Length: 268
Ligand SMILES: N[C@@H](CCC[C@H](N)C(=O)O)C(=O)O
Image (cartoon, rainbow, N blue to C red; front, top):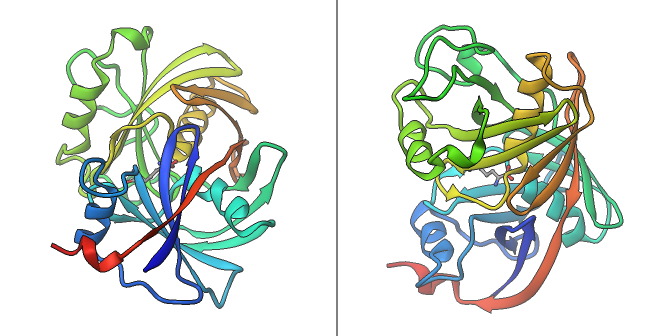
């Protein structure tokens, strides 16, 4: 039997497993079974905390579809709460410094990348005003903040069929590693509304890396100035970035309950 903790950042929910004392083998199939909301524990992402030679802890991230990915902003804010102190976290996207705040955590998410090959895209193009679009959506921007994001700035977010278009664009061959799809409405230079269709998880109540990528794209386009408050269905994140620098993300993190599970029972 193994212990897990159910946590969330603005309703983007996680099953967090600590493997520092006793290793747990994690496969794509097992992660998918644990994340299943009908037959498993249920979560948007499964988070595996482990030991690290380079940081206080390491963090692996599995989407609800079982795919392992490099970055998750909301889960990163949950780690200092889980560990009980400020932590340096080793991820596939680099070392991330996360500090506790009164309501959650503040994290240095590293520097964004804009080169088409780093997103990655299937072929070379400008990633700020992309010569590409889907149906009535305006030409988007792309940013990699440890994971790939495409961002559409729309006039009326409520008029966008985010579920249908998100699912379509996530799988477009332009994105060889698939993509997280952000639909954003600029309210003023300091405030953005955002809905995210996450790669491997679908519509979530919040996406921390989506908020980072969207704020960065808005600042690069000259539409916004940091710090930017990004309002998602689950609540607000504050994102600060200036060209040439790293991204600071600040927002809530919540621990809901602890549970016990037999990990082998999820193997089918
Ligand atoms: N919920 C996350 C992002 C999780 C990973 C993403 N779906 C991907 O596939 O890259 C966040 O808060 O950033």
